[in-house]
Image 1 (spheres, rainbow, N blue to C red):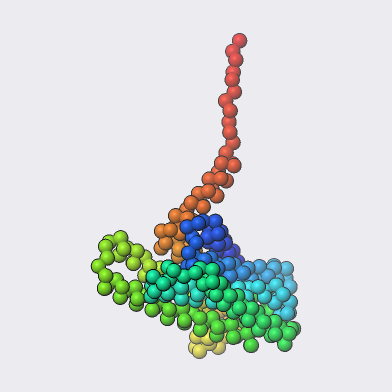
Image 2: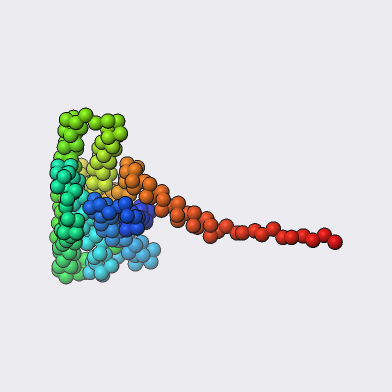
Length: 293
């Protein structure tokens, strides 16, 4: 799982880093994308405990013990879903009311989005703490999916509800953009931007949101046709986790592929990092002066 999680943490941290550092990325959508990346970092760090438990040979720990090290990941997973929904809502506002959107007071506007995301994460964290107090001795492997059992299935329902809401909002964005495209005579450059936007929305829905959706519904679908034993069920959980983490890691690559602005910023920062390392590794050779007798 860390094979997917560690690169995901890296690319999400890089998105957060370039957003903070670059003045070109000061819009509300840029902020919300960075906020989502921050929450995904918290979410994906959950796998380090599972790695430690597996490598150490302990294999199983109490639910209450696991929650001490993974509560931040439950918070991050929940808040990330809310932040993604906020990003979708932000884009819908941008295409429906472009004039009013440009005149928004950023600090109050972004504070509301941030407050809602943090509130959802805190709410789910409280649910997890209450469940741990109720069933402290349940044995788990430290894997994220092991924490989402019994009463904590509420997190799955919450995720699916927000993913559905995301799909509806992005569908509305697509409809508005298409209507705007058909009623306005736009040039080739604008048409290219339009095409990139639609591709970006499709990719976000299919990979980022799709990873969460398929990661949540895969096991219930399999259970309809096949009765799985405990080992098979756990293996399916692992595969679900891989799909979920692919979705959690896809935001930065999506922006790199379809956003010219983000690609320029990413390339600029990558050049700084690698060129600096290259210069530090270069050994200056000074030619010696040879004097003949």
